[in-house]
Amino acid sequence: RLAQSIGIANPHDLQTKDRAQDWQMLSEVGLLGLRMRDNGIPLASGVEVMIAAQALGETLAPQPFTSAVLASELLALAAAPEVLFEELAGGETRYALLLDHNLERLASPEEADCIAWDSQDAHYALGLLGNQVVRLSLAEGFEETLSAADLTRSLLHRHGTLGAYEAIGQPLSEEQLKRWYALALTTVAADIAGAIKGAHTGAVAYTKERSQYGVLIGSFQAIQHLCAE
Image (cartoon, rainbow, N blue to C red; front, top):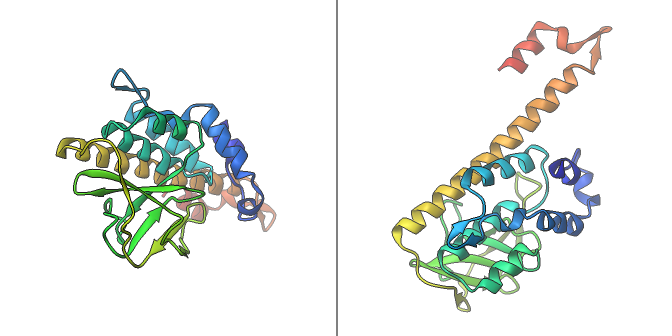
């Protein structure tokens, strides 16, 4: 129900949605704090994160849920100060992910040609220096906004390197980093699967409404084959 209320039905909605209010709704129902820890145990499993990502993807909700939940997981693995979790879960502080130019891995703040991914209204980007989680401000050095195929997701680009960054928590072990990448791939895949499901649902619904030559187009065998595929 939340995904339906904050999702979009057409490109015009991207300009008219109250994104700040919708972001607060995500926070109030607890979606931004899914990977916070209780005695070291995540409040939500990876499967539950996947379910949320798929539901939001299905309605093309233009909110940076993916970067928020993955940033939260990075902070948790690094044993970051509790106040950072509270600010993130409360919707007060937003994080993008600092990725390399191929969008394949977390990048170092010392690398050139990096991208702040899923950066809508973000204050900081989280990256890696070695195995140390680092935080850098998006107010410096990220002058270029990239045009993405996904109109619901914001990307910021910088050509040079940044010297100003802050180490967060403890360095990650290789096992922790592997687990984070597993959650990242699962969450992004669920978002994609949701978008595909939403597109299919909309296409099938259209075949039940659109008439051609006096009959519903869903009665045409060629259209039925496309829907089946």
